[in-house]
Amino acid sequence: MSVHSEIKKITTETLRKMKFDKEKITMLTAYDFTTAKMVDAGGVDSILIGDSAANVMAGHETTLPITLDQMIYHTQCVVRGVERALVVADLPFGTYQSNPEKALESAVRMMKEGGAHAIKIEGGKEIEDSIGKIVNAGIPVCGHLGLTPQSIYQFGTYKVRAKEEAEAEKLISDCKLLEELGCFAVVLEKIPAALAKKASESISIPTIGIGAGPDCDGQVLVYHDMVGMNQGFSPKFLRRYLDLYSEITGAVSQYVKDVKNADFPNDKESY
Ligand code: KIV
Image (cartoon, rainbow, N blue to C red; front, side, top):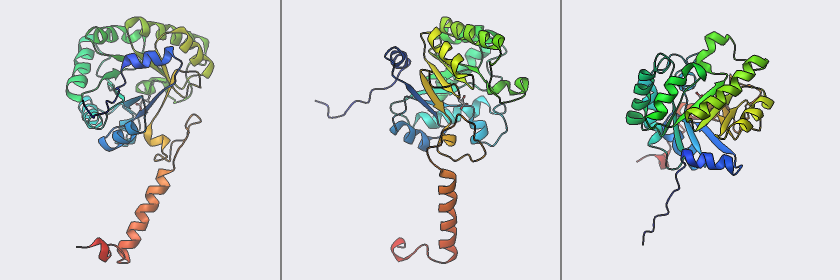
């Protein structure tokens, strides 16, 4: 008899069942092995290798510069740290919009080289052929609607989206389209809570909200924001669970003092 306790891995089907059972879905970002290990051990259902890596890991102002090779590298690192969570990786800007063949090629690289369990792409009707092509190849796709950061130069602002009726109607019809195309979930970013509630009730696949109120089927946050590492970013929707920026800079300055004062290393810390 095996003494190993089996870890029940989260699949896209698990998320679908969670929506059906009205159990909230949890998702956080991670971009490296060590963080992924901690986030997985904390019991999150899904880990997103977001293209927000461009901001928080590389210091870019937008998500646009990150490349597919860089996203694949981050995904490989995360996958090695995860035992339970469903690993979803963003396809970066420019790797799926031009045509369905290119979209499929990018998604296949992310699955084959990155080791992701699923991919996420931004947009609705405009990229339906790309979504269809990827889903038909057997690759799980998570949609992303509302404030889609890859379109920031078109939006011109990171303000709440879909406050006007026309954009709100398009969002609901895009949600339905994503479900029809076979997406397993859809991220809703920075839209009015009432609209997110309506969207969540209109489709049978889970909605995962960020700045989209309490009625989504799940929630996602950027790890660096929720642990308070990213001081310059304080949107209303963000709840900070730690103040790691202060903790880490405090620890570093204590280390600097200890070395300068010849207090570190002491005898016990020496061979
Ligand atoms: O890139 C990212 O981290 C994301 C989340 C904010 C949903 O897309």
